Length: 237
Ligand code: APR
Image 1: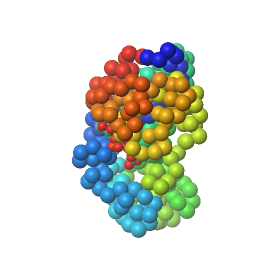
Image 2 (image 1 turned 135 degrees about the horizontal axis):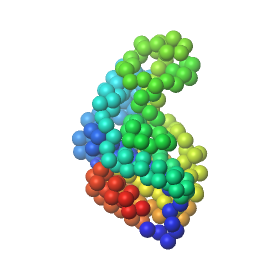
Image 3 (image 1 turned 180 degrees about the vertical axis):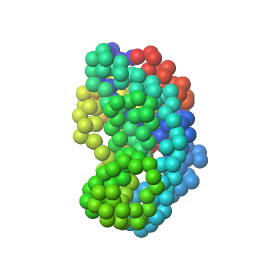
Image 4 (image 1 turned 45 degrees about the vertical axis):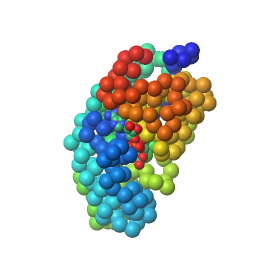
């Protein structure tokens, strides 16, 4: 642990934390982007060209998510947040790149979904944002304005701006401890957060199955399945 006692924490999670809940990661062997072409499914241009396929892809992922359960790694982070708040140790920000809701179902109170949320869609024409578990097609009417054809998943696609960046950079500038869990460090800006945290003097920790693209920037690294290494690490601090 660093000389500076951890007060303010920023945690960044990626697909690896939900892998043992049965949700696929993107870049591991057999991952989503090995099976599916992200250029045809996860860009605004892809959605404009073929909304049927894009909706079908997210409908299938939504169905998997509804059947999935949070695991011990999600629960360990929720317990850490509770402890941090109960003992007033400092600020605690959980940022996830995941669009699943397993952190919330695992007990986390505050989660910043920088890449959006799978269980939400929004209406392009009227801006209405709503929660749902059911499938959506290009003909589904907006529950608010009633117009069909304008709904899109509330997810951040390649080429779009992640959500909550001001809050994240503010927290990184003031953080004492930065922990990245189950992310390959390939997608920016999230992959650049470790450098921001280091520049602020934070101790940086990588918890994942294997080293990611930016792993040399971490002061401390632990590799293994998230359900083992996250509770172990959380128990130590
Ligand atoms: N426990 C811990 N880590 C795991 C586990 C596990 N059981 N299984 C896999 N991992 C690790 C992998 O080693 C890999 O480093 O999780 C990481 C998953 O990496 P990616 O599939 O690239 O997922 P992520 O980093 O979250 O991707 C970032 O890319 O397309 C997108 O928008 C999508 O938010 C996503 C972003």
